[in-house]
Image 1 (cartoon, rainbow, N blue to C red):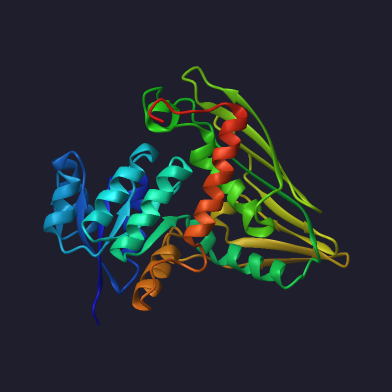
Image 2 (tube, rainbow, N blue to C red):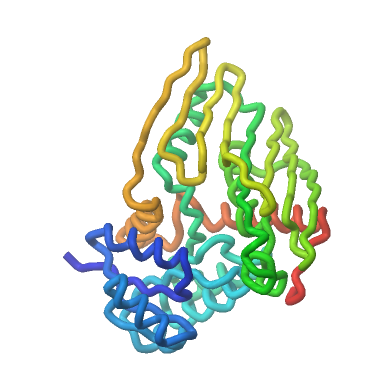
Length: 325
């Protein structure tokens, strides 16, 4: 069986988690990894059994036989590195958010179409088995018509260093793009695009928004969402309909359980994940490639467009513009 050869650009924590899950996919092979620090790349390659290590992203794209590139660099580099990989004829799975703003994404999509290459935002939660099941239940009107969605995502991150990715506006830091994308995705998954957005934020001394609260207004529903870097909540989510509700427990973005409440009865369900959960987005990419697709139907480029537009709108409301924009 021919294996799909992967390359990884940007070798931080998330790249390590991704590489561990990639090793669980028997049809995948980690062909090459690249960091701006060659020694770091060599250590990563040794740890995760990559065939080659590079101290230059472009060198990996030119010299390696990697077919698909997973981009795990900081947010502000996603556009440049995705464009670079596409220009070299590679398929791309780019970590979320796929771009800092909608303008960047449109250029990526145009180039992917021109090069006839696969492009997808690595919104791994969309492929999580529990979230897929909850989506199926909601679509089947198991809990009636949806009237309310609630999700949050917070952790304490104000000790990460003011110059590091999370708290640095020059690196597109802040809670919205880093973790606020999850609650927004959750609401969008069940309710689609809102007719109106309300948002409020508190700011950290570097200028990034450390806390954001959002209300999405729909014709017959609302979503209340929150992201923050100054507190540590349980990170729960729920979807409430006219005849019942579905609750996803702690760390809902990588859930393994959900609770269905209806007719005065409560049912608990468990769907254990394989690996860290990145396994499922890797399978989606490879299934798409094997079927000649240039985008996913589960998380399409239009879905990424819609979600990024929502984040653009929230940033406009709370007054966040990055120095490089």
